[in-house]
Length: 302
Image (cartoon, rainbow, N blue to C red):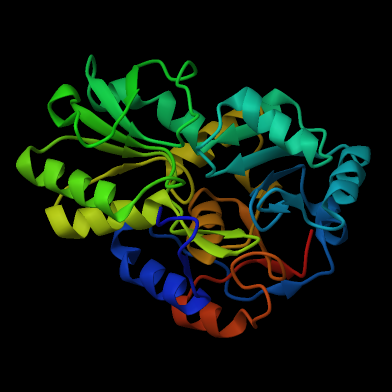
């Protein structure tokens, strides 16, 4: 395996995000950032919060200290909450169970994953085809309204497109076979996790977005991305909030090029969490200056 065992440094991840910037949405972000201690400091200014998972609520399978208490306090203030995550390895029920195991009380309709965003649009990309999924071995696809099978390089001729859900068990051999398959025959690729990396207990794991951009560079294909920072994820999240004005919604995340850029493009306010995600242990100021992606607020943790 290559994805979760091989990790990237912060600078490697940031540089790669900057390199693929032309494929990301364009947005005008804030000009200045207001520091705060956490979401409760700014809660009176918003009716709802969109919450990233990794780096905001949890690192790997572990809840970030204080996150559960913050969610409870926001509920007590009457705030609407949506977990907007690019984690695409889990069907909705499994995602809810995973958060509950960490102590969070999110209901099923408060969790929107890029997997769900993608599943709702697969047939619009190419109807009536069989998709070959690059996914965790234990993944099942009952929640996806399309024909989906696990793809293991010997099934090249049996699929009409590729669905990238997880890089958990992706090997260099399988990635090479996928590249060869795309060069041999042009087929759609749907990427249900645009993240390049995710913060885990062992470091920054390589995620589907990293591999998809690598494949795009090598083959010339144009993947269809679903999830932050792309508008499809924010459109679906805002729909769950019953028509709230985006300016009354804050996107909270740890990554400039996904959470902050995407939230800003959708018209939401943005909050960068510094201490537990991509920039843990580093000053974010140089990265903000280099990218020009400026969050409206920044806090150590939620």
